[in-house]
Image 1 (cartoon, helix red, strand yellow):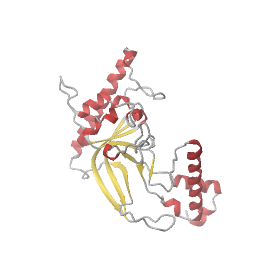
Image 2: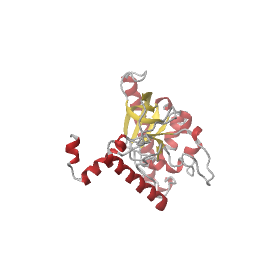
Image 3: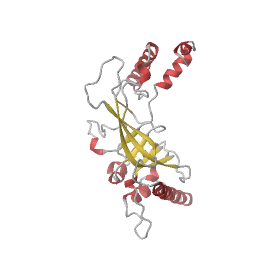
Image 4: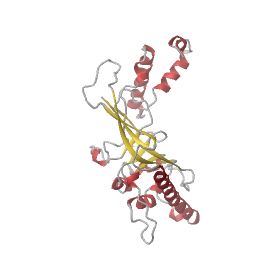
Length: 281
């Protein structure tokens, strides 16, 4: 569609197109306690809303006068809603980061030690009390160590995690196993004011992509084997707990109010993936 043809569309339709173009890209929240800072709140932390790095000014924000004007209208509306009603902004235009959106974003564990971190295990912590909202989970391949032999079913961090914490991911629908991490460097974006950032590393976005042969040292057969083992281990844990709950209601785990019902894991899909680090200068 040419610019002239686009301008002939009804205003409501053009604004709907702009709003879609301004939607944030699906992102990744990388759980790394080293970056957490204590806040003066009672139990607050800097990552309390699971902030995800993003491009401060999306391209659609400065394509033309109309898109720019519409973008700033959205920004003003969101700022007013947050100030008056405490509603968390969705577009977060002009910001370097935005809150985690469970339906589109992914929660990523990159190291095995993080699977058993106290903030994941503690249901009153920033992380622990929100495990039930995570729909998309990513775990790096090096975190996976499946030990099947008795009598020590929990002799690996992964086994401990899947039998203990993973069962509290009541909304879980997708599990991504990350086999590779790759950096992509891009040129500088101009912001709506035409000025460039003095920060040499302006933003690092994390994106999840499908694993492809050659993106890591594993062969296709090795990836498929690990994916099958991960799927069996996850579904096994969910089905075991779900079966126990059907037999005895007393085994119900304590969960926050509003948590979805427990499920048997049969609806979870599994994907081999790689993490792309988008660095803009």
